[in-house]
Image 1 (cartoon, rainbow, N blue to C red):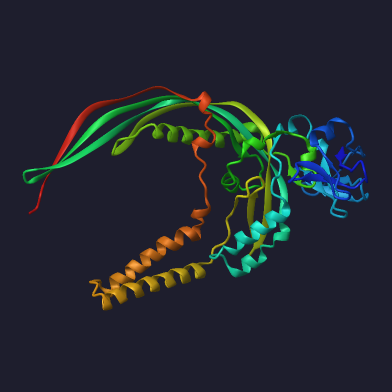
Image 2: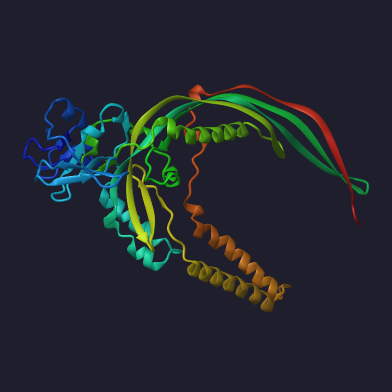
Length: 414
């Protein structure tokens, strides 16, 4: 079964419009609400002969459908859920890929249209100052494709406890000695936490780390799945079942519990965890489609991918880095810092050796350049507060008990 949404007024293709949140006709501009459009039966779905399957290799298959607009054959791989005819451009939704357990529970519709995504990608690429110029010129925004990516979102319960040796430090002078007192506390926390809608992508071809950086999504826009949202975009079904993806989420929740418990401990100079015991269990899992703008580039026989969150506009990727450009930036900053320090030495009589000035310049250059070149500034870590369900989370038990004091004495050299 293939679905192509046609305008009841003029018969032209209707696609999902990000601005109005409706199905919009490309011909006459007519708009239809998605919920009523499916319910009142005005959509046009055409049942064709069963799709042909053409064997390519032992591992890959090409499935062939027929476009109901122009009659051309549409070739898809086994994962495609929604696509478009390569001849007439008509959007096509393959409903046989969304039946039974393959039907998504939820979807976050696109909020950023292609024109906006193209502009944002252009601006982002222009700032890749440490990538080879040849690579930057290859990143063409016309290659950007809108894709609904398959995710599992989990509600997870985390219960358990952790114990710490925490220390408060006090120093003072006594005679000719420097005295340091360390007051040790036995700190215990037992928690019962719930984390809601923790996501993990379920696609084999999408980079897991890249997808993690795309978080967080605003779940206020989470809607029950309806096929019209896919019209005009590509979509994939999941490669990995919920049980196969869950270990990644469980590991994240383990870290979230660490962070939550640590956030309840304060007032100490040092904290050393002695033991922890967590029991992490999945409550619910829902198959969900998230919006992505994807750009793929092949450079020197290596594939690079860039992604934009189609709801929030966050962009990230892992571009190649030119060692020559990085070295040039380090050299320039080193020379500038050295010049400033040498000028201060000459005219302000700053007591610094030229070799020391060069070392300082190099250290500053490395601190400034290397984090930017590695992309550290573009990486975002989504913390436990993003998914913590505060209404279903609590500290079950806690205490901070003083245990003993250790004293260190050190002679003061006069």
